Image 1 (tube, rainbow, N blue to C red):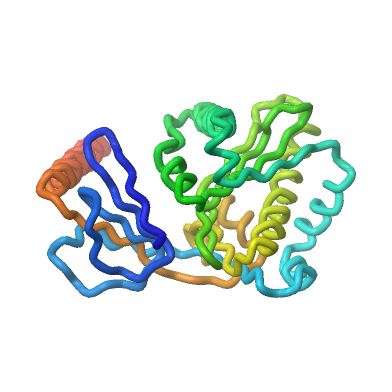
Image 2 (cartoon, helix red, strand yellow):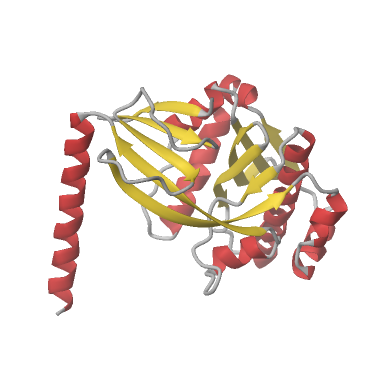
Length: 264
């Protein structure tokens, strides 16, 4: 059962992956990822549609590779000559080596700080996935320094891409280009590893728009994959959660009204 209990500062959440919408018995609230749109229920407080791409890993490797754009293919081939070390960390390895998530978190948060954003990696969530044996982290190193991290939640024949971060602060354009190539190559290595592990579906973790793709969307689209749409559904289970989400919605409305008034 791909159900994970995560303790936040005030609420406990039950994260459910790769399963149909159903009743759960743990957590103050539950989030179902990638399900069909459910019938209306009083406890449902959010139903968010999500578009994504899914690569079928059950096919021959050459067939999968043939879906990639010419640019991706060329850059992956170039990577075979680059002096870069790659690692795949299973859940057991991650639980035994705290430095994996520490380095991942440092690179992730540093990347967003460089962009002027304050965003943290949810280490508790990743730990919950790892404790059930369902977390995979991959990394690329240049001169023994981590420059790229990817994370996936994996259960049975399903996998979903969760996070990606890379070191892009170098002033050396050749290093930035190298990291860009290696990021593509790391995705290809991830696919091959997951395929060998019996995973069939490689979910790219969401696409904002197929019709007007942003930069990240274009990157994901360059690997091919079939278009898909599903829903992420949030359900409250306790009065504490119901109250907390009500306050959150109220604060969002106040912020929206303030921005609207400031713009007029």
